[in-house]
Length: 350
Image (cartoon, rainbow, N blue to C red; front, side, top):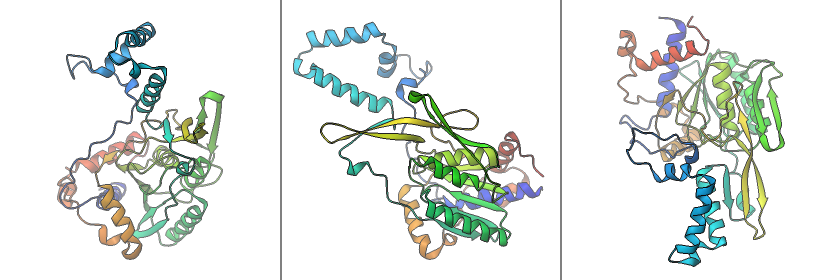
């Protein structure tokens, strides 16, 4: 068995256990649609009759104007079809059809991002480094550098990078600094594209990576904003496998625009584009290996790990296809999937 395949299996096992809820598979949690309904393609096989969304999307400009005119002159409650109500309906509809692209906040105080999340690191299994990056800020970047230096001295040859505590920020320059620790020098990490201003800001790596080895990235719906850009860059350049759940789909730069009442209109004014040219908004980053875990359990484990470490929470997840017998028999589909994924991205097994 190749050394790379064995190391990959060890990382997959540890990562699966780190995000496993218990030995019993977690119940399926419905995921909110990350794509605007306006962009969804009709599925003829799904239903013989078109949905309301499909009908609305099929209306021409003339149809839309006719609908408003007919409603104003025929609806039983004229007060519900005033210009003010129509404007309210328009705003509400835009917020639904442009998820994470348009938000209405009650006041300026509520516009501030969440408080910072701490950095955490640990060595698991003797040679696998676990890094929970937390908030992508300068303090945690310094902590990352310290941990990577320590890992090098201890012969750590694989990393599990946990981005499930990395909430949304607009600081993509800082996200690029984190990525530089892993991405090759001289390469574009990602681009911040502002279509309205016809302006692109390309973030490039200007230093050699501090780590060269296997990388597994853990993500979920709390992985948002600049952390999504980091996850995508790690997958593109380091052939990292992403495990967990889809990210938030908020890899954008927001502008907070004040309204006369004091409320805030938050609008996505720029989006992150990957090195291969695709936007991360509003789809987010999809995992290579989907694994479910409740947010409540995850946050409890994160809280307890500051006292006990992550070691006590690394346990068998009860996944039949994730065991040594299957691996030795050559029938482990997740290992095969990992090897196939790495080959597809250009990393051949040793």
